[in-house]
Image 1 (cartoon, chains in turn yellow, blue):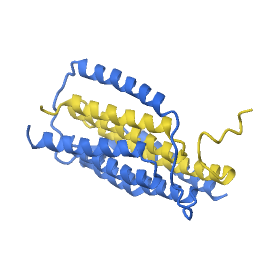
Image 2: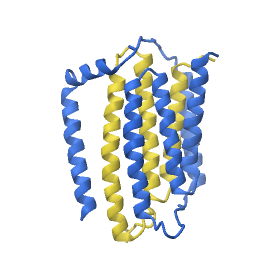
Image 3: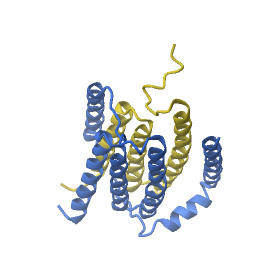
Image 4: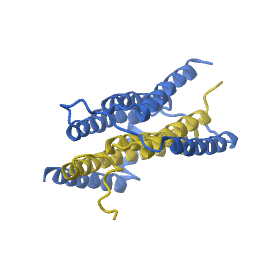
Length: 102
Length: 162
């Protein structure tokens, strides 16, 4: 079977679903971040696949680059937040940090 | 089935299998290493799609930067001295059902859509075209992203320091 646009879209759908599953089920905040990275990669595959199989020039690849830059900024900020949460609560389990709930 | 298809299935299998282990393994460090293979697989997919520069950036930024940052986060926020780098999972069954339904719906939509494909000729090296686009039409986005990255990194450093 020849590889077409559909194959790449299915691949990115599966990657996205695995990322969602990781975000929903994981307790540790860093594992939630890893799920987020999977989702961003899935979106990038979509951008580049449509850039290859549509008549848009290279704009899809450019937006994939922008997404990578945003992912880097997001990872740095999130790690700083996780570090502060660890200093305050001594663990980083997202289901145990519920101080605001009464 | 020609060589292109075989390479695609190889990279897709590497990506999906290691992504599956990332979200199921209980050991955080092991998950981080499987994430490495996922990023390599996705970089291979980019090369197959003719995006050589994006693939290199993916390797440099994700594998060299974000993954190292995540591993540092794991090392700082876990008591490495006790062997307790495990993490639990919650709500696995409802999450699996929901995600399965979601995947089914999106997959059915993708499979039933008549995609209008034009296989454009990607130049052998995309670098010069991308560079020209970055300093012509997209120069405002480029500069804004630079400022955003600077502000985010300064903010992260000052938040983590105090």
